[in-house]
Amino acid sequence: MNDCKEEELLCDFHIHTTYSDGKLPLRNVVDIYGQTGHDCIAITDHLVDKTGLVGKAAHSIKASITENNFNEYLENIAYETKRALDKYNMIVLAGVEITKNHLSKNKSAHILIIDIKKFIPPELDYKKLFLEAKRQEALIIAAHPYHVLGLDKETLYLWNNRNRYAKYIDAWEIGCNKDLFNVVSLESYPFVANSDFHKPSHIHSWRTLLYCKREVKCIKKCIKENTRVAIKFFRK
Amino acid sequence: MFVLVFFIVVGFIAYAIEIIALRSLLKVKFSSSYTPPVSIIKPIKGIDDNLFDNLESFCNLDYPQYELIISLSSCADPAYKVAKKIKLKYPNRDISIIIDDSLYGLNPKINNMYKAYISAKYDTIIISDSNVFVGKDYIKQTVKYLKRNEVSVITNLIRGTRALSLGSLLENLQLNTFVACGMAFLNTKTNISCVVGKSILFNKKDLEEAGGFWFIKDYLAEDFMIGKLVKEKNKKVALSNYLIDNVNEYWSIKKFLNRHTRWAKMRWKIGGAYYISEILSNPVFLAFVGLLIFGFSKAAFMVFGGAWLLKTILDYYVGYLIDADIKVFYYFLSPVKDIIMGTVWFVPFVNTKVYWRGKKYSIGKNTLLVESK
Image (cartoon, rainbow over all chains, first blue to last red; front, side, top):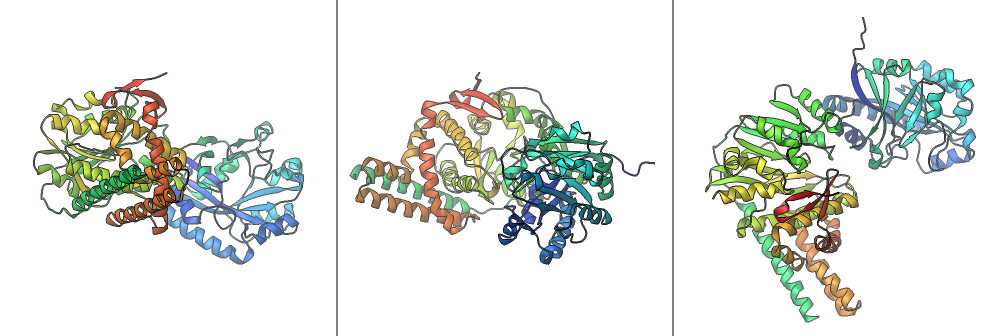
């Protein structure tokens, strides 16, 4: 018997707040998504690898969560999770966007870790990082893995090394904000589509539709199996 | 310069009279035990700011008997999901969702809510826009006007709230000053009825006798026409001093300009000569024109600065009267809004076409619509 009875869930698994470089505080972001009828979102503020110059710069302008405020970050998300469920019947998941930025786009990668429970040092090498996320039963999503419009955040490392890392990755972003990456479907990789929300105008962007029960375990299973998944461009 | 200063002074006197009308209206108090069952129609298209909370505020009203009908033209509308969530959250409330994509006329809002109007259970109907948030005693404080002096249509004072962007701030300043004072003055001191679609309570029987929804389906300003029709049947329109909140959080400047250009075109087609007088009641814009005409002279600057300061103070006072949530500092932007609105005022003279809900129309007398290509 299938214990994950189907509903159509409007989801966004890539959202930033003022904990990193988002323009709105956590509560406002949760309300924007609740007011617009979303069913499941993940808060994924940047957790920046500070081994390089670019990473150090991000930390100096407080565009990253740190080990020091990580528990507070999780606690606040937990509070919002309860509030959002009571008020909007919306699931809020805690996540991070592990951010490995380098001057070269070919060395840069952003990785969404969804349903994270404990701090993961972003400086870990890729394999260790993925294994730690798996140990926490978190989802691993490759964020904007291919060329995007504009030059500010190209992150091609995972795509260029997909033969080595695809086995660890639960899904790849096939759509991010207003971009689409058809290479993901050409490789038949599991996919999701997200907003990469930083400010209110980003609400008009790609979303994932999941057809599963409104429960965290079913949502994660649905993404991993990736058969009952669709994407939608969301407009208010 | 003298003529200019004269008109600026006249403008301020006119605005002061409007403020006095608003102040008097807000002081009116009376109670009534009249509580007929009410059907509330919520026509929705797309997701307005704060939509979930706005709809939810209509599920928590302190009133003996009412139904809430949420009407949409398509279940593909993203607001449909929000409407369904509200219905699920309040299973014990009388809430129905009606989807109807029929084209009864040219006004898309009438098309959207026509079936809801037909399906309404009760004779007392409220039409309320989806961007409206109300307090628990909204119906009680509005419906009580029905039994007074042959009143058949009641509209409410509007207060713009929760601005979190520049476009929203300008919108709320306009609603809380020009619109609030104008509505109070026109409805209480003149014979002109200013009915605004954000909240209209009316008696269905009276409207039907005057032609009903079918008669107004091709008019852009269906709210104005509802008031006009019942007045022609010797019934009255009243303005309730119960403030309803129009929540505008993340508006762009473009959205602000689009709405007020459309509203200006409607006022021109409805008001005619009265519309001309609007520019004379915009003293900041007149002072700004003076600044341009007199080549930024010291005297012109002084007049402009004085007008700016005085208008800021008056607008702050109006905000205080209606308990607006705009911070004191932002009232200094109100004259900027007046200059923008002064410029928008000219638009209807060169272009009477409107884009509304994805379609283009020409507008004629009393805002009768003709679809344009």
